[in-house]
Length: 419
Image (cartoon, rainbow, N blue to C red; front, side, top):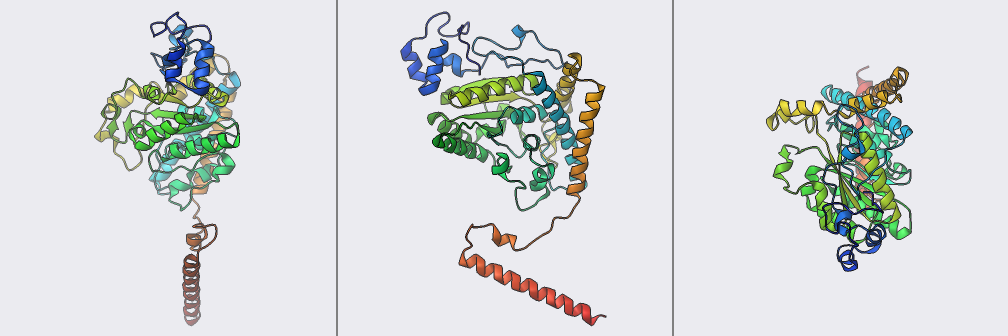
């Protein structure tokens, strides 16, 4: 969240008055306390989210007046640059095409499962674009669009969903954690990487993605508490898409918002419209800047919606109404951004055609790559368990190799006999 140097938030403790030193020290320590002192706001103003979620472009694609964006002292965000907005729109279009293509590939039996982020692409894109090349991102199983936006090859990103035995890509090369289905474990991994980077003196920011359901897990508490206590440069990015599979948010938490959970850990929290890529970029860009400057961890909640079922194995009609889904169709991040850029003269028919062609190229790559059978090597069962193979694994590996060789010899003999 942005910290205003000239104002205290109206209606909050400390309005128009200097902040008592002992109050600052009671709530915050280290660099965060220094930020509070430097900018003359209360600790509560620093940690609590704005009263209204940050939204810059409304659902009809119109830029809102500054006074209506949810901004207030301590929560003020400049508009992202035009180049960043165009790059985000391109990734939005590609991401939507990828979501729809993968859903079709599941129906064709070429993928085992796919948790679509259709309707949540703005969160995916902003999460990837706000980071520098050397920063890390730890995605959930639903964040394949963010993974690809970080530069991971589409086929490698989809490997895990076709039922292969490995994650598909090199996390160290791309600074992207492997997607996996255990809920919330990636937050602990993100905190560990941030802690290691801090110990090494590296200028690394880590963005950890999760859903609203993850905030009910113990790992969520452990990750946030550790990050806050050790003052780590981690941004916890919660995509609140209203449902933890079939459980609505109201059955998980009665907090004013998930962003309000930040104050319990002594970190800053903010709420943003998760279907407004302009606001998402503004909030996350600022969060990354603050984390890199040493202000400690931050929690950002994006309010969005899962337009499609949890996965292809889920029947969403069992727990929500079509009328509810229809209300969110009008808030689609893709059409909203397209209108905003077109009205500003930043996007024309030629640009739209170029981006659409790129999206179709990625879809064709997915169709071709996921239609190929992957070669299977049984020795992979033993090759990647330990860096130095144990005697037991070596014995098992040799046993399998011997059995396969005898099977091959037997098949060869039968073939000669039938000639």
